[in-house]
Structures are given as structure tokens and as C-alpha cells.
Length: 109
Image 1 (cartoon, rainbow, N blue to C red):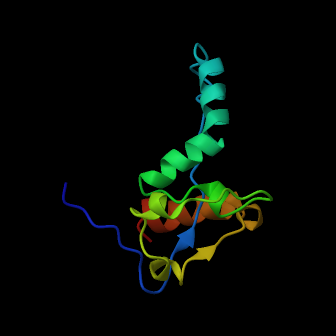
Image 2 (image 1 turned 90 degrees about the vertical axis):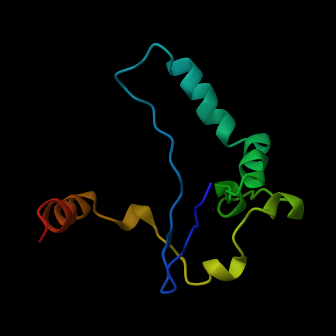
């Protein structure tokens, strides 16, 4: 596979990944809930780390998980993240994002 992950030199934002359940497909919602719970376990976080992801519990939280160095071999170097900023999503107005999206992306303004 030919690909390259690039973080802009002027920075980017550090955003957590999300999991979402579809409220219209409820036949398997127990499985989805179990999976979502498993994602935050030590085991899952270590698996994600081995495959290049920086698990959310290694970055934030009251009890951050420690990732062994050998699991970090597929990570980008820490220097690539120096200009990355963490965003407090609670301080962002979703209506402002929607308006910006509609005006500047969808409307092409």
C-alpha cells in the first residue's frame, strides 16, 4: 500500500475518535454496547497502539494507560505532533459549525 500521513507544519487539532450506534438499527444494540465498552479496555487500547493509533487513554483521562515502547514502533514521531492542539469540544457551538459548513463548504462561499 502506498500512502503517507502528513500533519501540516502549522499544526492541526488533536481530536478523539468516536464510536456511534445507529438508533435505527437496534437488532444488535447489545453487541454494539459491548463493543463500545471493550474499546476503552486496556486490551483494546494496547491493540490500537500496536497498529499505529495513539489510543485516547494514553493521552487524556484520570488514569492514562501506559503504552510499551514496542507498541509505539508504528507511530509517527512525537516531533510531528509538536504543533498539534487539543480542542475542548464542549466550548464549540455546533450551530456555528453547521453554519460555517453550509456557507463555506456546501455553498462554496
